[in-house]
Image (cartoon, rainbow, N blue to C red):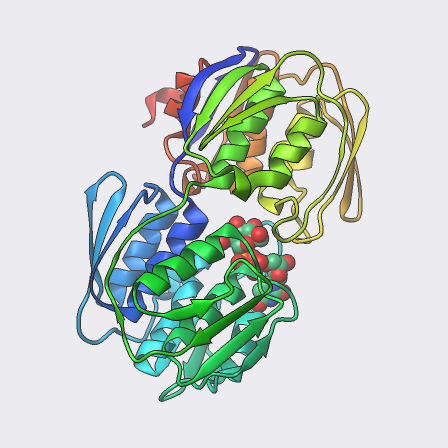
Length: 421
Ligand code: UD1
């Protein structure tokens, strides 16, 4: 059982380099299914979720190799198998991304229906409606989604909600469809643009990624390419929020500031000093954090994936903050753990009312999901005394490359309990 021990109270100082984006790497790995030949992906974060996706690809007959901690080669030759294994897809929801590419390439795909997770029920109806619009027959059988279409046909697809995953699934499927597809009310996240950039290099005809409408002219084939994954804006935001909560001065390297404007704005509103220069940001925090209000929204709004980290930060603000979560119905479970550390929090439906306290204090706490875990790490770094974070399902490793050594490098007293590695 993985436990992280943190002795709080040391300000963070120094510099940290941000890894490649998990949420870009996962759909791009799935998109390699659409290609033929050799793909080389660089800046791939070495995370358990990435390893799970590589295992899914292997189960489909696609060979891959980590040639460097952050460079992965993927060879797609010949036929791709149709069935994604139950055990892997239920372990990581993002493996459902393979459904569109397998269908587009092979005309048939059988992928387990991913279950819900700690933050909500997370259905895939928008993905499937979109594939139906492209001409796929969709049915459920024994817990699997089965989609069939000898060749997909381009169409107009309007999403009921700008779902990140559904935008990616339909965009990938449409690249090999016959004719033109227009997808409206799409997600505009930077990870969507990164996926489109990868597909365009591979030979896809896509325009409009990053806006509310994506147009795709189907092509017959895609080739293998080299592509560097964009920096992880959520990892960057997490180190920024940690510096703001604990105090100190940290240079955050390898970021794209335009990808994280809503996060930077909210930090500034809290009273944090931020100096941007090129692809770096210096975060300087002296004095009190001001209370602020936040509402999570699709990009370019404030990301739900930063909400738990800001909950921890605002638990220490002067005054009362209000956070409204609009994306996931159950993304406040970490608040109970924050309360155990002395936070003054009240939950009213999807709104958290956080009255700032002067200090948090150490307590044993449990990680329920990846970003909740990041929020608890921030709380523990700021708290008085030694906090034991029970990350029993190793959730934090799913999204933060080398988080222990990166925080140690910033002067934090953090380690794995009992000599674990
Ligand atoms: C992606 C991110 C995740 C982030 C989320 C929202 C990846 C690997 N994960 O998840 O880190 O928190 O975007 O920014 O990129 N929904 C439906 N039906 C669907 C699809 C989604 O009702 O078919 C709902 C979901 O339950 C949720 C909301 O739409 O309430 C947003 O989900 P979505 O944008 O699809 O998130 P993911 O792609 O799963």
